[in-house]
Image 1 (cartoon, rainbow, N blue to C red):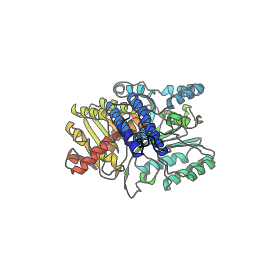
Image 2 (image 1 turned 180 degrees about the vertical axis):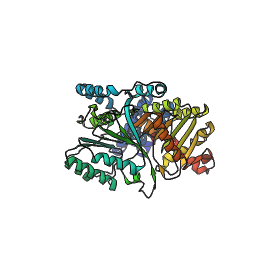
Image 3 (image 1 turned 135 degrees about the vertical axis):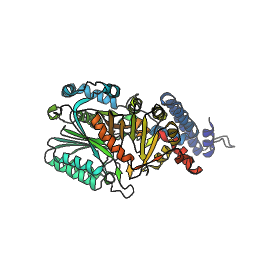
Image 4 (image 1 turned 120 degrees about the vertical axis):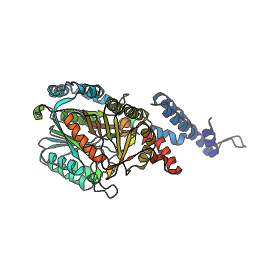
Length: 499
């Protein structure tokens, strides 16, 4: 028996008494301790077999051995790396609905893009990674900040004739959330089909009354069902972080905004909220609603009735677009590989805006190498934190970034929440993925990847304006701080895998 077990028995009075026996309470205590140690051993075996890194295995192993009562439940909630059953469920759906799958393939086939020239360099690997193809004939419009984004979304909802798909990580029951509810119930009563999907963890404050009002109007509503399946029962660590709106299969909206007045800049705490969405028209809309349909099928085991015919797609000579879904459902870490590929492709410029900068060792090394080979690497992060632990962890990386020539900027004109990347003059992405472990490995995310020089110029102009409202920072933001602050930063860095 290990030291924790002996100490546990002593705490319960479980060592033999002079009469040569154990009391009932002592026996019960011994059973509890031995059960905890057995659970710790089982968990330790699981760690050894499944840990992503040696450091992670050592960290969990020491915690499980030293503090089994705390570490065992913590590990089984936060320690898993794969979301079980999702991929198998979608495979089952494809087999059950072969005719529909063929219809979708036929609808997209005329618009599939054969990448040429420089497009191959940036996009070919992403097609393999996502198991989807770039499509042509698309238009992509930047929607900067909340007012413009939600006015465009509500305008599209008002014009819906057939169906509306709504998916958000956070939906708040404030004035914006109520406006969305009222708009959807009105359209549903007018005969438009509405499918409403939300993450139960991100939207945990959403009331039953809000949901029941939608259902009473005929809206199909469901949580993502993060804990569905026996192996996922206690898994609150996986989140569906996607934000998707699709109207009639004609236009789709994807980006960083959730539904809440803070995203309109109406929060006293955050002030101005700097975020970016995109509106997409063309065949990429079908790919986007296919991603939504997969999440919907996971939640309810049913296929929503959607339009897959390409009658809405007549944007000749449009942009090459790939809706890139990343998730924790397989061994390949597609989120990490997406960023690593983009960083490695950069020749002249790599600009990234992210509210959270807690990259793993591989991402940090790739950023440093890009800077060392002469790429203009700029990372824009917030000045004001919304999650203090994530903010502190990010400070730990400033000295090593500066040493390699990576330029770090803190946004001054409010809270920065956009997730945007610009690679040279050829590739840009706008989506939901942050530059942290949660987005790269644990969340369901979606990024619109665009291969188009004209769109890249628009993104360049937008980010240049944002950089003009930043202050450049370097390692002194860490090294010049008091010792107690640096200790907090290092502790936060140790927590980076679960932030």
